[in-house]
Image 1 (cartoon, rainbow, N blue to C red):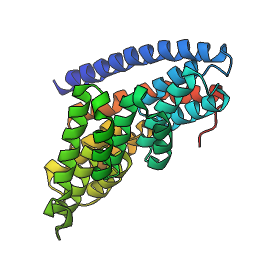
Image 2 (cartoon, rainbow, N blue to C red):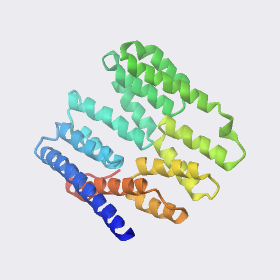
Image 3 (tube, rainbow, N blue to C red):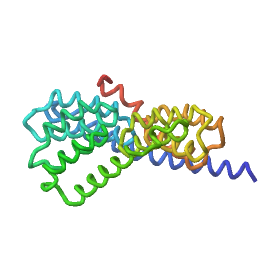
Image 4 (cartoon, one colour):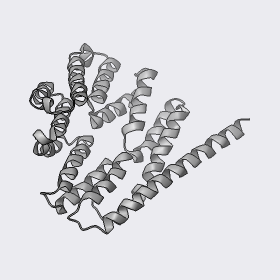
Length: 269
């Protein structure tokens, strides 16, 4: 009985991966053609192509595409504003907060209050909640109510988390677990992945904390790092089938984009 079940599972996974790869292929080809046939001064096709890379977690590639496009784009046009806004997102995901801040400070204005809220979120990521509150006081009245409420709630949550005694606890699991969950909630992706690696490399964390750390890596780490992470975690304990599937799907999503990348002739930073 075990063989047919495994065969069905493997076949189903292959079908899903093939279907998803087809979807990525269509979008990739569409924007790649548009990118190739559009003057460099119009950065919108490059931005949309970068979005394809962003959605599978290839932030370094998306960043490189947008950075190159911004260098050729007309700096007084809408494409430049879109590229700058999305470059701020890419830089944030890569932990380059000061660069992201530079883009957002130029974009923040009465006409772009949502960019000001994004700047406040960046302050929260850097754990500068007082600065975030100042920005919300200045710009919050110009932004949509639901967005303001969301950022204000996040500020309060992080302020409470920063006061948690667990962050300074003497035992490894309590301290590193608290630091990990603070990083995940504040949106500090690079730090959270590094802390997840520390937790998974240790034999001390509880199974619940190990699972949370590995799930975070499966969701947010670079797809080309997941095979090694899965192999290491599998040597510790059986990994739930749902996470094995998630790793396979993220790898399938990224494989064609990584294979296609050299054709774009854009250098990674």
